[in-house]
Image (cartoon, rainbow, N blue to C red; front, side):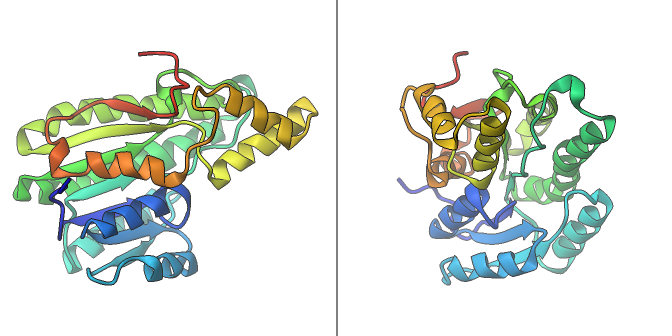
Length: 260
């Protein structure tokens, strides 16, 4: 299938590892000019070297804990280089824990890194999308948007807020040829997943292997996803072929989420 995004410009956040990195590579393989964004410049340079060389790729060093700095850097890049047809919002989740044990600071930090920074990027990039009459914003969130996950109180709350922000934005920008959709990854082989597994093992006083077995058995597919499997869904939503898909949540979870 020709996704018809050759020579488009894409911004991929959190692109030095996991789902973000897999998405950057998949987009580049479709002929997209990819701009990586993360806070570690050395890791950004390393991923940049892995992208196909046929297109013009770049990176932006930005820390989502500092929204003012992010706003300056994204606007400077657009002013000095180009806008973006595609934006992939992808940020590591907050630490786990019960909701009542979370501090106000934890909520503020998560809200800043996920919702505030997504909004900053949307305000900076949508004017170019409107001009081009083509835009794709894909938010990588979590299945907790549909079904809260025990032990991830701050994450569940924040992800739900991002889901509602996304749906509202989708309604506003649809007349301009812009879509806004959410990918909800299930258990995916990333550093974040291994962190969750280790925490569960400590909390329950069992082995990591036992936690892994339980998690896999809770998924109809009986395995974890690879980052590339999630990236494939993201790339389709970012393509011309998904032009009439807008404002939805798509779980990529092997069938684990019980809601429709």
